[in-house]
Amino acid sequence: MMGRPHRVPGVLRALAVAAALWHASLPAANAGDGEPSNVYMAGADVKIETPIDGDLYAAAGRVIVQQRVSGDAVIVAGSIDLTGTIGDDLRAAGGVVSVAGRIAGEALIGGGSIAFGRNTEIFGHASLAGGDIAVAGRLYGGLKAYAKNIVILGEIHGPVQLSGEQIEILGSARILGDVSYTGRHKIRIDPGAQITGSVTHTPGAFEFPHPKVHIPGLPALRPLLLLGLLAAGALLLALFPRFTAHALQTLNVSPLKSVGLGTAIFFSVPPVILLLTLTIIGIPIALMLAAFYGAALLIGYLVTAFFVGDRLLHTARPNFTPNFGWRIGTLATALLVLWLAYTLPFVGVFIILCALFAGLGAMVLQAFSHYTGAP
Image (cartoon, rainbow, N blue to C red; front, side, top):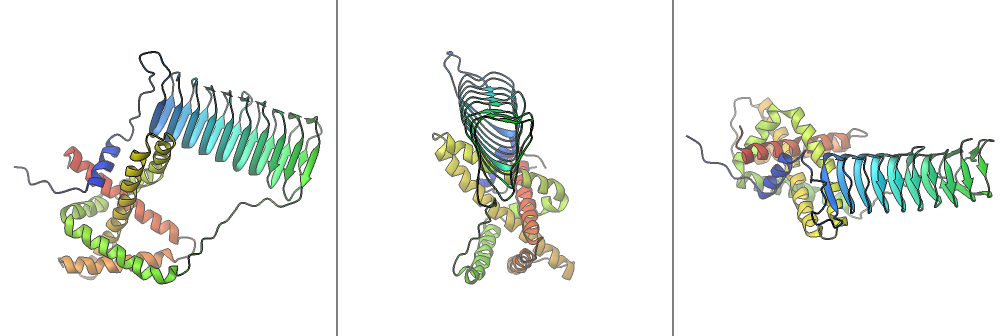
């Protein structure tokens, strides 16, 4: 005999379905009538192995483009590897970006590390921003680069504007145009490098911006924030007591799996929201997904806070069964403990992120098991 199924919040159902489709991706097929069609892909790994006659929009942990894309390519991923051909412009943002293909239009790329291989060809203007940039291949529309370390070893036609802490032009480089740079250190140019234009230096030191947000009255609002979290936790426990209890059991039984899944969801959903926003037509879906995402983060954090409170109570009174009032009291204690952990130097943010990842993953695992009917 089956028990009565407990209620699951709508946001969790949505994330459970997303988890079920985690490794799935949209088919990279073209329209059957022969007309160009855009392709939208998202997932943990996206690999383009067939030609695309329209534009490509992709968001994933890793994106590999091995075939021709006739139109624009808009890619957001942790790792991007492009060896195919882009028929128009490339817009890309990622942790590690590697380009070894042909781009017929402009290239606008931001990333932690950006590398152009010797087979790279870019016929429009290239604008790059990152931590480390290495440019080989051929650029026919000029280059503007902003990074901590910049190395030029390819052929560039047109003006070159560089801003960095360490800038180096190797002997294999050939620049048909002027070079202007900004940085604390003098540019290093190998005697074998060929530069047909002038090399000019603009005084100034390269610095990555470190914005500091100051909100007047924020310290006074922190107690209100804790009270708000406490009220949200009480509402969650009152409306979904069984689901909350089962999520805590999931976190207790599978802590590593919960942290892993929560981490993946935390970093993968925002690129999907951005991708949907860029498509214009997907803005309503992006807004709905953003609302689900924000609610899921809140519930995930509260799940971890409930778990911490239960552990503290179990340590103090091992055989005690708490009622609703006790659960809210332990939640308040746990929220205070997590806030104190956040104030620790260096490790405070890491602790809070781990707590968020664990609760988010446990919540989605429990919602997924309810959605599929699995224990």
